[in-house]
Length: 493
Ligand code: C2O
Ligand code: CU
Image 1 (spheres, rainbow, N blue to C red):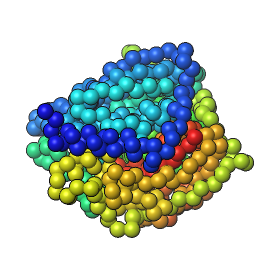
Image 2: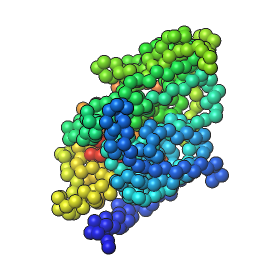
Image 3: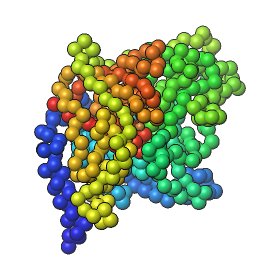
Image 4: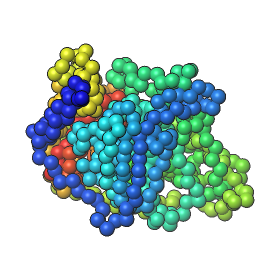
């Protein structure tokens, strides 16, 4: 027996198929970024829910914590040049997909329903081909109901190691993964999104953690050593001002891509502002044995302690010899760079939408199928935001907005985006690592490579990239902003 729901979902899916050629246009080539001979690592990955003691061992367990493989704060690590073949299975009770944030993968494996694949339904599988051409710090997460699924813990760090990094000469490594939880005293989830939150800064969690710990981790590292501190904002809302209480620190990579080290004192306000999905690597020089360096979020009214590095000299972790402070650059990134002389220019406004528009499929609003249809399109049910007047999606949930632009594979482009809202927007372009050319509010900042860039209110930010064939989305990574309209896409062929 096929239920009415199954039937309608089936026809919605059929609608997607016929919708693809007309609205999405012909399917661009899906380009692989590694040779066929690249070494393969097979990975099986299961999205499923667990009960977990997020508030501490003696507090009630939280139900419906979303995980990959039952592991919170999971990390996958592989050498650059590896191809991950990921056998993904969805054991969640909801639709999902997997998106490989910042990885230059073929677009058909980019995990964006409904434009690169259909949703993976409960019980279904999908095989992802994920080449890892570039070393760095990445993560992967669902691209369907992000606010709810990432909010409840569904993401994993992905570290791509470059053997050449060893030459930079770091003595220790430390990871800081920032993620807040929205929990009541009973340990159960509070509503993930409020209308007020979605229409402003996003709905913040009330419990802050580093690597899942409610108290800042203390990490022992060799005295006088150089520590590579690698930070990821896995939260969908939190924006931090990343910095530390020593003068002996440099910013050495942004979104996993090496840059010529910048002394923290030469950064605006001595901090690096990071929003959802952004990563940063810092070099921190440790003091004498017994002394500490504290890593803070200085954006909070009261600086929020993320991690304490403790300098030690003990058996198994000897102090380094004391030397003058020197920056330790990582090997330069080797990603395709735009040609600025020939680049074509595009301008976009990040703005509020013309009015909260309810997304309505062609069904009575109270029909439960209406929700199922919207869910299968991975869109929110309201829009608050827009890119140059287009929201994702508009009115009819079965109709996505037209592409922001149709671009040519191999051609270089400059995007100038101006934020005319009152809130920050960390903007992410899929499938590309772009060069950030300028921030109008930080004129002295050197250019750098990134996949997600912070655009402050009243700021214009320019990025440049060499276009790669595919249908690629471009969106704000404050997840409620993207779920309520701040998303568009480029067709590149
Ligand atoms: Cu972290 Cu559209 O992605
Ligand atoms: Cu935003």
